[in-house]
Image (cartoon, rainbow, N blue to C red; front, top):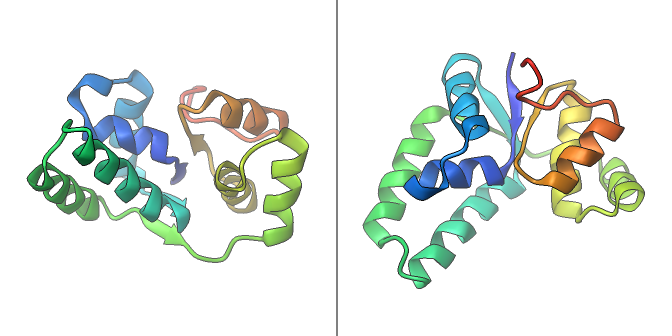
Length: 136
């Protein structure tokens, strides 16, 4: 079964010093079952990479190589969020609209959510959403 991929998980794949068991599990699952992310994910990943280039943590070449590898994984990008649901979730759980978009997609598609963001994870559990790593 596919899952909803959060940018926090993707960041772990970009940096060797950010290993996390859940990120490793998500990468295995992605290769087997696929993943989907809200369109925001595309921008978040690239912003994370460019910020880390500026900090000297990675090079332009590292960014290009990571994005090539990421594109081969075939993450599907969802471009049709339910605006009302995103805003409701953001208000109810005091999330950013960005984080609420991941939760909205997970709930709308009845897919597990993969995230390292504690507030988003808490909100997902409160909404009855399956969180990747909970036996999934």
